[in-house]
Length: 82
Image (tube, rainbow, N blue to C red; front, side):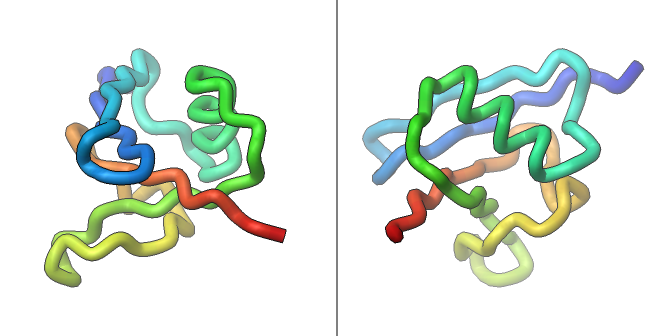
């Protein structure tokens, strides 16, 4: 069993951030993580996840693999417009 991880989920700006503890650790796929966040926070819109990447000056990058996520990392749902 994996160790629990804590994530900061940022909605909009810095004034709306929420903590989410994943008791089973980081999911193996981005789709699993998307479903977790969608379910827990009641999101109805389609979105992609972005993560804060320290290699690029803490800019947000599109999450392509959960291996990019670390404990206490910051994620941001980016609502997709059609």
